[in-house]
Image 1: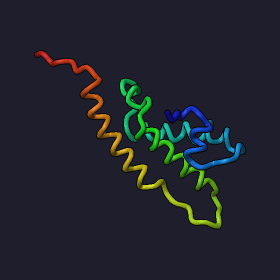
Image 2: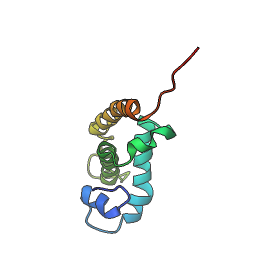
Image 3: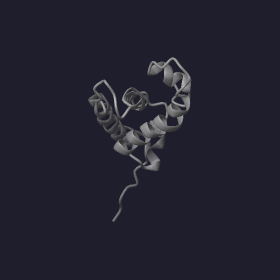
Image 4: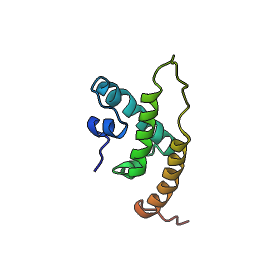
Length: 113
C-alpha cells in the first residue's frame, strides 16, 4: 500500500528519479501539502482517523506535491500554473466523504432538554 511517509513512494508517484530533492519533498512539500488539504477539509482532531490510509487524501496531497515540484521556480521559461483544479475536486470529494465518515464513526450525543 502507498504510504505518504516514504520518500521513495512519493518520488515514484510524482515521477522524480533523483535524490537531489528528497529533503525538500519530505520537509517542505509534504507537510505543506498535508496542511493545505487538511485546512481545506477539516482541522478537527476528531477527524484525524479519517485521513489515515485514505486514498483520496493521499491523491490530493500527491497532486499538490507534484504541482509545487513542477512549478517551484519563481522565474522560468515555461508557463507556471495555479494549483490544479483536480486538487479542488479532490478536496470537495474529501469534504463529502468526511460527512459520511462522521455519521458512521463519531458518536453523536443526543440532546435531552
